[in-house]
Image (cartoon, rainbow, N blue to C red; front, top):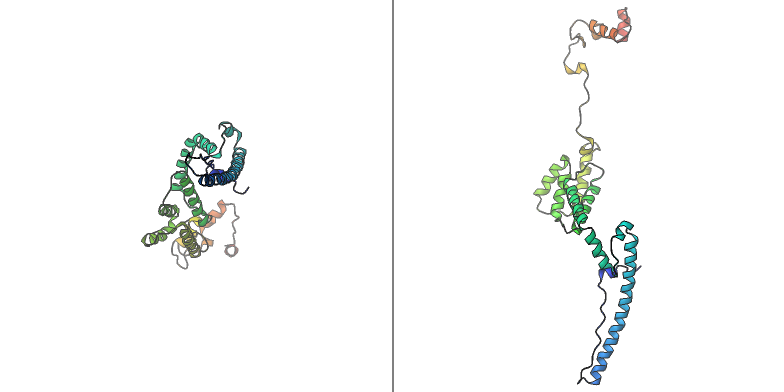
Length: 255
């Protein structure tokens, strides 16, 4: 399988033109030209054999890895370059549509967790796909798209980058973002802000919503008795089906 792509990367070798002896050409000069031609033909035969072998293998691989529906729609071709040109002409419209979808996904993509390194590599891969479709993007623009895809926790980090005179490449961006994500995790108890969401205060109990004095009831807010002796609290227990205890001493023990 060595040099299997020779027929794709290199044009077919051209056969050297056979020399014709001039009328006044001396025999020595003609002999040199004939010898050079023989050497050129020897190199051509060897190059042509390698190229034909590569061309045959490439066509076999291309046709063997293409579905029957697509392969039947492509006419037979003698060379791999002709076959690829036919495939390209068949799918030019669908490639443009795919490029538009890919560009929209790249611009609107957001980081929702799972590893910021993988997120940036995925966006870089999408940009490389667009590059193969004649839609190259500047690396500076890709870096800004990555920053725009990050959650609000990275806003200060983005501002610091914009104030920094040096432009970052994708590799440095990955390293710096990984460090920043680790810092955010450590500052938030091991959780990312974009993963944990806004923190909520613990639910307060009823008696924590207002100040009470020492002999004030926590149920009716009146002074002179406690909640366990409050008539309103006792009525609530009766409504819930809890048996009323007549003895105040036992009632205090339960409450």
